[in-house]
Length: 317
Image (cartoon, rainbow, N blue to C red; front, side):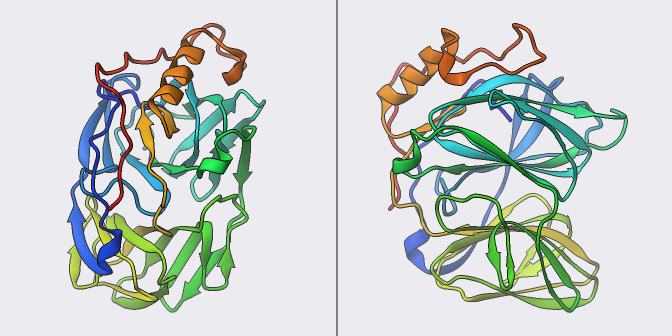
């Protein structure tokens, strides 16, 4: 998914990953996406004080507004896009020749590398609910120039314990390991906890973690969590106890704190101002770098203007 908000830059934030275990809530902010019939999304990452969780650098939730998704071709560099539908089907087409439909509890993961373009359109009955998550991970510096590629995973492993089932879409939880490609240690899991249950999730203590509720309510580390906010849990936990009275569906994200400083502007993740400027120019000049997405003719999303300041890294620490 492209960033269609008019302010495509982010405020530099400070990392909380050196504080050990914490329990801190970060409210999502509403961001208008004019390219999807005036819809809004709820953006949980990046935050001023929480720019990343591991390599996860972007998290939008698009909610049930019964509007169709129509995201025209747009470019990416330096990141992976992770598309995770909750309700509704999404057709993905890209410049490496992919043309697939992703459905709930299936994973589309696209590695941009040096450059790729893609489109995303909802399909089927547009009066039905359409909701899900769009996430990005930042690629490490030695992977920024790799060739782009795309993966779809229609069968994903599930970690289970009494009352709990967690679909692992990236990384490992217990004995469940996803086949999705990751370039830094990560975890991404969509979990359902039955009403009246308490469960313990195994964690990697070297990771920082965060939890967001999709449906219901969840008690996490003494915090009563409802849909919307992101609960940041810091590092140093080897397990996480969760409980619910009425049932809950939630997402767990985590990873080793990302050591590199990144610049994130519009749909690009890089390391220098010049790198971002060049990517924008290449997209606007229809460079072969980003290829073409079949089926759209000349339709595409133009890049927004650059801010009148030098782009600087989002620092950690």
